[in-house]
Amino acid sequence: MKKYIYLQFLLLLAGICWGQTAWGQFKLSAEIRPRTEFRNGFKTPRSEGDKPAIFTEQRSRLYFDYAQEKYKIRVALQDIRFWGQTAQVFKQEAGTTFLSEAWGELQLSPNFSVKAGRQIISYDNQRFLGGLEWAQQGRRHDALLLKYKNEEKQTALDLGLAFNADQDVAEPAFIQSPGASYYSVNGNYKSLQYAWFHRDFAKAKLSLLALNSGTQNPDSTLSNKQTLGIVASRNWGRITLATDSYYQTGQANHQKVNAFLLGLSASLQTKWTPITLGYEWVSGKSNTSQSGKTTAFSPDYGTNHMHNGFMDYFYVGPANGNVGVKDLYIKTSFNIGKGKLAAHGHQFSTGSVQQSENKGELKSNMGTEIDLVFSQNFGKDVKLDVGFSQLFASGTLLTLRGKSEKSNNWAWIMLTFKPTLFQTEH
Image 1 (cartoon, helix red, strand yellow):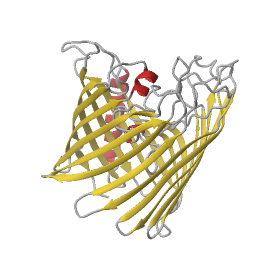
Image 2 (cartoon, one colour; image 1 turned 60 degrees about the horizontal axis):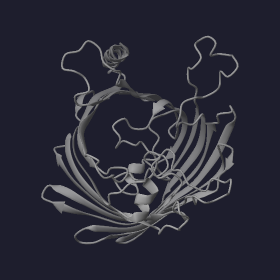
Image 3 (cartoon, one colour; image 1 turned 180 degrees about the vertical axis):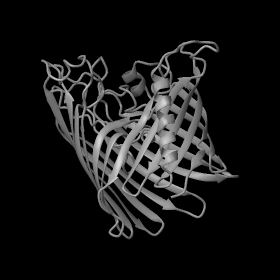
């Protein structure tokens, strides 16, 4: 029933916006994105006897965008489902349809605006704050943003605020009662405050991030963790040097935090193909450490699929624990016909000292991953992506994960339709 209420609301919104086109611009667009995957050691190595998983998952979205001189709004309806999860003939099904985005942005002046609602928060290379759009559901925040942008000075500053609550106590007791402010949604922050600054220079770019997240402890107290980051790049002709580095402090579940992420890369633009050589160290914590500090860095709200290999062995789910990772990588791409082939290679090592159950120190090498992705556009609305990844796990990785098979692979094919269905002029 809820999904039909959403649909009726959006159709009403479309009708209102259609009637207001004399004063603003209305755009109706859609996205259909089925993806078929063959998983044979995805996210973690296989064990003997494991069978591959094959499935198709589809994302379907409908976007309503409306803009006037002083404000703009977006409402996006989203449905996520596996092919076959609903019978051909049915009267009801599990709810998989919900609002993906619902926000409004008010332009206070030529340089200042305020944006409020359910929205994507994504910056730079999405290492710490990203939309996670590879995942069919994406990542969304319920937040208030104060935004400054100066095109002439190529400068931007965003201030973000959020305070989350869950309706675990029925109205009206939710308004005031013992424990009414306790936040019980796992994997999410209770409060968030951040500032993001960006500046473009003639041959360089610089971004600075300062973020505080408050998480609810089981004993009803709040732990506040701070993340400070810098993302910078500098171009010298065909060579670009870049860094994305972060430091975490504060507390997590009553433990002091002292963790870091250090990323460095160099890119060379050749006649035939770009080549990027990079290194990233995400700090971990030894499994024999007696320290009460948290030294394992956590890229909490980023698009982690974009980093440390496409097979999602690190920071997509809890599979890596506190081990951390060192990632030495090389990336390139080639034009093939009307498409492009991206090729990435990763050599993974532990980000901390780890020991086996018999107290012997494990070697740092965790394995090698090769990622290949072919992409081709069919006009401006349709895109085909085909990927294959192979990971050769080391004995250390198998020991850490409690698995047995060194050879692991993953293949997928995805077709994306993103048409504009209707659009008015100003």
